[in-house]
Image: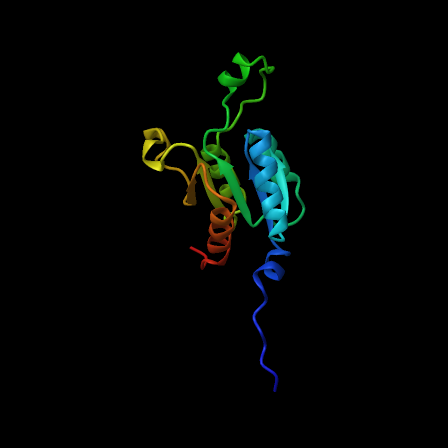
Length: 153
């Protein structure tokens, strides 16, 4: 009887969908390209409220949320001349809502600030891995693979 070989990481990744939420367009494009080159399907958003809309409307599973902790909040958008109205979500609040809707979705937070400096009111954030910016594409690839391959909590 022939032995079954494990699927290569790239073949395994083809069936995985990632929602990438980063407000810096150039960084979002670079990260998205690297994830696609690793074989993932990538959905992108620049703001938390847009990401939540994509998450709610996407028919298939979203296996992983990669969210910048410091997504702009409504006050910051108003100062930049963006119209007010729908409240904006930072990466932590977005992750809370995503995990509440689909608890099986894994989370990676990315930030330019160490995790220890996050505001105390964010202490109740959902469990997730963390990458400190700047990071190289290989670090992101390894972190994504580790998070997706880890046993369910």
